[in-house]
Length: 283
Length: 283
Image 1 (tube, rainbow over the protein chains, first blue to last red):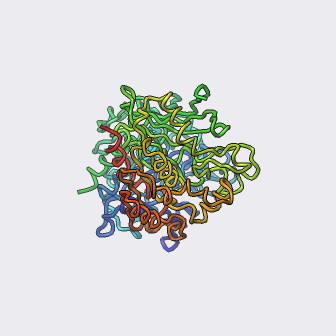
Image 2 (image 1 turned 90 degrees about the vertical axis):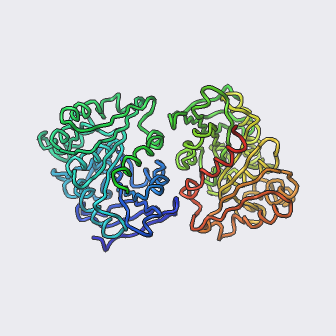
Image 3 (image 1 turned 120 degrees about the vertical axis):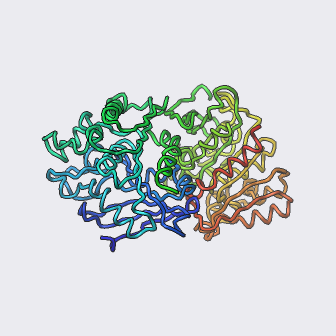
C-alpha cells in the first residue's frame, strides 16, 4: 500500500509544505487522496499530528485552502492530515447521484451493505490505514494524535475519538452531526451503509458512544447559532450535551452568535481549536 | 448606480461581515460584482479601507476565501473591498475564449479599442466608480484608502497608486506584473485593449509610471522565488526595482525563498501586508 504513495502537488506555506497525495487504499479497495501540512519543525524532528475530517461534498482540499489552520500549525509545530470524504469513481451504481450519500459523503463508517461495503470503509481508513501510512512515510509522532472536523466530519472526529480514547489524545469539532441516528442525514446514510437494523447504527453515533466511552479529556465544540442545519435539526448539539452530562464527559460547547455553517465560521475559531489540540499534543 | 446595489450573500467572519454584492456599473456598462469585509469596528465608526485587486482568472471571491486577511482586518479595524477582475457576460465576441484576455483578465486598464472599449473600463471602475459607491453605501473613510493585489492585480495596485498618489495612502503587491509592456501577458492584453501604439501602454506600466510618480511612501512587494511566472519573465520585479532606484522611490522587495504564485504564498505573508497598510491608514 505505502509503495503506491504519489505526490500530486506541493506548495510551500508558512515555512512548511502542503502536499496532496494519492495512494491505493486497502481498506477502501480504491485510490484515496489526502492532504498533509508538514510544519517547519518537521524538518528537524517528528511532530504531533492533527487529523481533520471534512463535511459533506468536501474533498481533501477545502480545509487546507479555506480554514487558515497552517499559520497556527506552523506556530505550534503540528502536522495536519486531511483525507478526502469518501472513495470516488469506484463504479458503484448511483455513487454520484446524491450529495449526501456516496461520493463526498462516506460518513466515516464501515459499510456492511451491498453495494457500498465493497469500497466505503471510511472508518477503518481514517482510524487505521491512513494513520499507519502517515506514520510510515512522514515525520510524525504516531502516539501524539488529535482529531477534529466539520459537520459530517465533526461526527467523524467525535466517533473516532470516543471509540479510540487511547489513540486520540484530543478531539474537537465544528458544527458536528452530533446524533446521526436521530437526524435525516444520518438516517439516510446509515440505512444505506449499515442496513435497516438501527441497533447497529449506535456504534457510529457520538451521543450513544459517549455514554460508555471513558474519554476523560475535554471535548471542544463550536456551533454557530445562525447555522441553517442547526435549525433543520441535523446537528443536535443539545442531544450530545445531555449525553455528556449523563456520562460525566467534560464538554465545552460554545454557541457562536450569528455564525453559519461555512468556512467563514471555521476560519474565525480555528485558532482556538488548534490551541486546544496543541495543549494536549505539543510540549 | 448606487440604487442597484444588491446583496447576494453575507457571512459573519471574525466578528464582522463578508458581503458579496452586485451592482450596475456605469463605467463598465455592465453588472459588476465585489466583496466587502466590514470589520467589527465598522459597526460603531467609519473605518479605513483596503482595496484588493485579484489576478488572472480570479473573481471577487478568491482573496476573501483563501488569504486569511479578515483575521487581521478585524484586528486592525480595516475594511477590505475585492472587486471582480473584469466585466462578464457582456456579449463581446470571444470574451470567454482566453484565460488571459477578456473575462477574468481586465488588466485594470480603460480599453480604447473595439470591441473591448464598450465594457472593459476597469481602471475607471476600480479607482473612481467603486470607491464612490463604497463611500456612499458603507461606513468607510474615503480619505483613508490603501490598495494591494496579486499578479495582474499587483500590477493594478501599483498603477492605481502611482497614478493617484493622493488617493491611495498605502500600496503593496504579491508577485505583481511589474512591467506589462515588456512581458507576454501585458503585450497581449494591452495590444487588444489599448491598440498597437506602444506609447499609450506606458500609462499603465508601473515601471514607467514610477519614474515620474512622486509616490513618496514605501511600496512593499513580496515575490516567491519558486514562482514559475517569475522564471517565465512575466513578472519582472527587477525592472521595477531598477526604476524605483532611478526615481528615488522607496521600495521593499522581498524575495521569498521557495514560494510559488499561489494563495498558499499570499496567506503566508498577508499579515505583513495588512500591517503595512494599517500603519499608513489606521490610527
